[in-house]
Image (cartoon, rainbow over all chains, first blue to last red; front, top):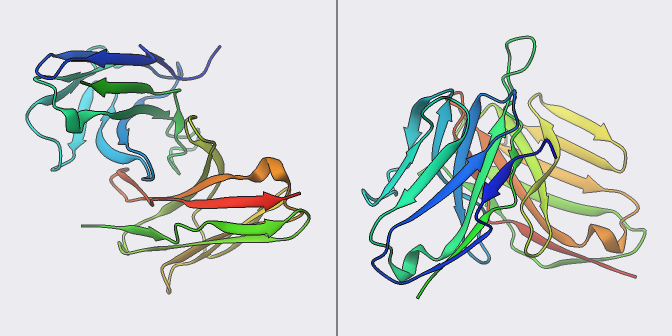
Length: 118
Length: 110
């Protein structure tokens, strides 16, 4: 499978615990995005990377959230001291700049990690 | 706060009809626009993207963009029950940040 992969697919944790999710983008894609989606809403932008550089982070994201992409390939999203409000689907997407240098930024999504905080 | 607005629906159309989905965006700096389809419990799947004013057709799907009105639409011709899903509109700025709307639920009745 050459698509975006995410691990784990499901995570149940207790409030106050830390969790870490992993995303492996499509191999030639240099942009990687993290989103959070709750029921009845569209994906909410969290952050994105171009190669290993984190270029933007949502102001809505608290300091409990951190993301890394150390070698410009896979990425991790960590949530510290989880709260019940963190329960959501966490989606990763990747995109490729395009062969001509222009980019329309078509993003391809992984299957998501569903987090439940008890 | 830059926003993308969609009617949440549900939009119900009979099989074989044309479904028309609409979206407005607030950031005039938005450059590329996308329609994704999302089935319940699944992740979004890219259907089409558009970046120039006018129409873009791909099979049964036509995307329309009017930058002056900050309006994007998606037409689905010959709607099928398998088209029943939530359709997400998204806009990307020059900085490649992408904002999604809340989605429109579409039901195609057999």
